[in-house]
Length: 279
Length: 287
Image (cartoon, rainbow over all chains, first blue to last red; front, side, top):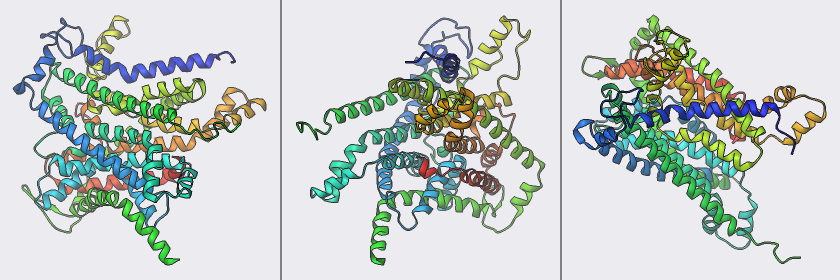
């Protein structure tokens, strides 16, 4: 191997600074959330305690955090499952051209680039004019899908762009029905990417703010609750909540990445033995 | 033949029908609704169906509109410059200077994980850093750079742009890295064999081949910044405005027709910008 050039070290230092820039603030509030009871929103630390975390468990102190967490979690799961199913179906359909497919494609792009507040406003207006109640599980759910589905579909497009069609042909030649081909050949091959789609579906929903602003109704999701807190809470309890929900996000990300790794390993282990013993 | 085509379209539409339903009900209809309501009239308590251009007339006759749109473009442009510079450098390092794939994946994940965490928390987390008694000011004072705490660190345009760059640089890193990874390494060797130095390879080989990734990243960053309202509200301490805030303020005052008119103009602006950018890149081919 040739020796590292000087530019490598310069770039590596730049990368290190970038990572510090990305994570530094989050780590700072994680540290500050352990402020003593008399501590404020900035350094210095006035003692170390779990005071602000305990505060979170006192219902009246800071609103309905646990209720909103439950709703966000459930909504995240709903959006995740829907995103995976709809994206796979869409990805499969888009492998062939069909009448109107390019219109639909541009709609997906529009869904991705449209300012979130427009979805919030438009869906809110429709529901109010139809005298329907906005609720996180109906209007909020649909609004979030306009944000998660484009990501899911773009991932599926990328996956199917790289998909080797000869696997399917082989299955078909062996007499597999289209359903069998899908179930036993295509889906297992794309499974690791589906975990990626699921990760996007859950986390984007769990953290979504603007699209649920006018569509969640009287029961807040967690990001809405946190946003409300920023205007009237001036104690480190805000940091404690931020730390907890970030830790939760990291656990979810770790879980998904772990599953993705496991499936990839299992796939590698159970890989084809074609050609073994031929020589 | 016609029958066959029909069948293929039918099965295609069957597969995308859930997708199409979601997009029709939560994207197309809301847009239509916004356009319709933008011609309505607002009273103090309700909105009344009408067909008048008052909302647009008011919008275009107010000098605030122009300064707010200008401000929106300013945020978009400055954020774009920084995210592109940082994003390109990071992606370039990952793609061409990190040698093993394991490290590439690990460092790439390190860059993308914040994307899956809460934006609002990431904004809040700048408070202890930029505040009047925050880390930045304490450090500057103890180093003797300034005598008094800087007031413009938090709740200013500086803070807005810092937060936007912080939130959205990932949207540059990912597509640019993705395009760079697909550059045939033998092209770079060929350039080197032909006598090009590092800077020439970067300028004449890598940057032209990375353009599609840059374009996709640009589309993300520009649309996210132009549609943003929460970062601007929070990080400027309600002292600056962009179009998104104009809309959200109208919504808070229940002036839906006026909010809708502003939203229509914003949507057209964003779509025109995207239309121009899409001329330079074929998204479906680049995935």
